[in-house]
Amino acid sequence: MNHQLRVITLIAVMLTTFVACGGEDNGEPFEVTKEPLKVSAERLELSEDGRGVQLTITTAGHWTISLNTTDWLHVSPTEGTGVRSVEVSAEKNQGEERSGTITVKAGNISRKVVVVQQATTEMKPEEPTTPGANDNNTPNLAKRH
Image (cartoon, rainbow, N blue to C red; front, top):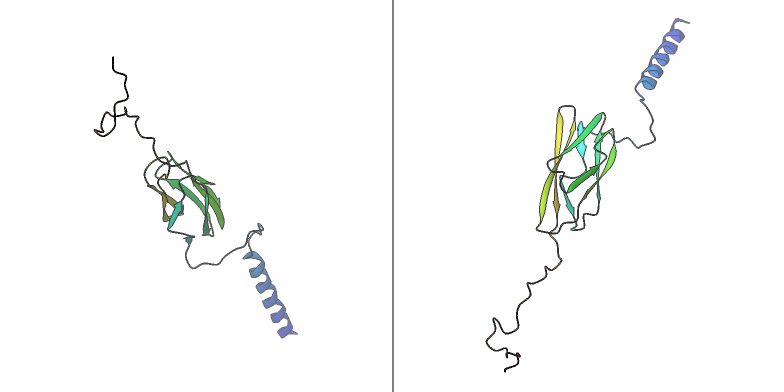
């Protein structure tokens, strides 16, 4: 009888521990990681049109995102809890290649992600020229009086 009571007590303690450590089930898959904060990439490449790409953040707690520039680079959402994908996008680039940095922070741990956006491929219009002004081989078509 004493042995059965010990077994029942042990099972009750194990079940209580299991249930207490289970946490909330928010419907999202939970990935066990050795790192307290993990990001799916250290570098992201965006096309010149700024079309969004996904960055996955994995942590057990709350995280926030900050940007070193908000002129052209955008992230949504900028905070969350646990495992979550965020969308990184940009304004259309009409100039040279540019880069920015996303910082993901959870507690006192942070990870940086470099974002590079391709330069524009559109041709810039050339300045209009007067026919024959810079070319000695072009005939002057102006009427002579």
